[in-house]
Figure 1: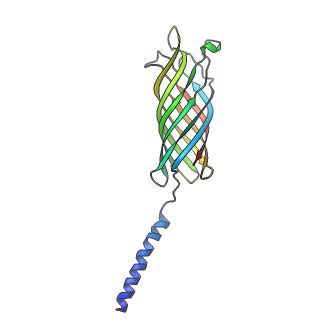
Figure 2: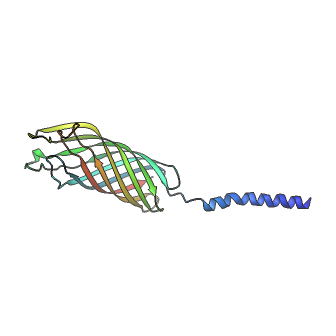
Figure 3: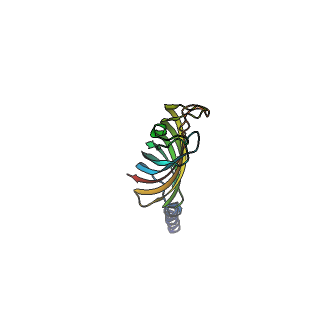
Length: 199
């Protein structure tokens, strides 16, 4: 009887130790989950149509919610607003021939934490482009347009603490007024620095 009780006690201790062993070997949770807001500023460049490549100052804001899908990775759904600058036409002088592009965005992002501090991110979504500029034709005309297009980008960043992070991003915004190459061509390469606050 004593041997049986000793065996049962030993088995109980063994089973109790199993969760502790798995807990020690489980990876640390670094993926974020919850609400966040962010802002970015930088440089936007157009290299198509009658507009030059000198670029202009740009900026934007966004907010959304992230879901942790494993200890290192989270998926976010976000909405934002982007101002993508004003650029002079290559062969024309005067503000009347400047491009202008801005509009709201709605999309998703995938963030992977390489370490508790460093992360990489990819993003994509819809961009309601509101713009104006010269058409890319032999006899250009100045047009205003509103059209649903897309954006996509990548970024890397650093988590300062539980709430704050900073990063650098590249995003592409398809700001075209119609299909083909004949409309207003305001496809913008956006290079920004960003800050984010998580609640």
